[in-house]
Amino acid sequence: MGYRIYNSFEYDFPYDATYKGNERERLFAKLIDMLPFFLISLFLFEKIAIVGFLYSILCVIISGTICEMYWGSTLGKSMFKIKVIDDFGNNPRLLLSLKRNLLCLANLRPIFTDYIPPPNHTWENESTQMNFSMNLNNKICKTYIVKKSKIPEIKNLLYPQKTKAAQ
Image 1 (cartoon, rainbow, N blue to C red):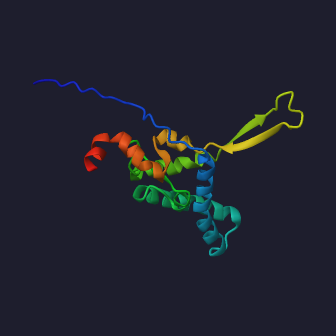
Image 2: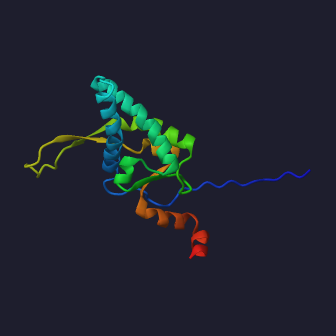
Image 3: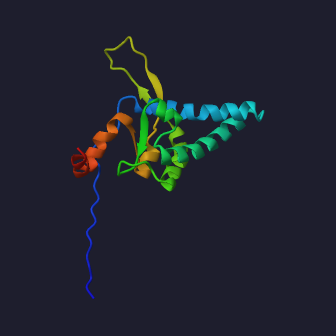
């Protein structure tokens, strides 16, 4: 019996999927996704606001998992023309999408940044800015948030022979 040796290669995708305003768009997309569920649970079930908020988080995790698996985006992401893709440029599968949506709760942890102006900028005040890091779940799951218009370019980088043959 012969023993075969298999080589495995790992590489990082040399494409910067981030773009200006991406974290703000993702935060607003998540809020847009939550709003219908929050309003339904608040008004139809006559729950107090915090209970409605908790129900909406659960509903967004479930609906986000299903929507991202089938279409690669949710209602909020569609409004901003952004999509979730995996390492191969496809929609994430069910378990990956579920893991990603469960980890989105970690994205709600705020990051505070202190701004101290240079000494010669006497007109500026010291301030603290709060931001949300909206990419922790993507780093763990190896998924990417990209503009829908960039998907053909990404597919061309991933599969150059396939796209040339189709032309």
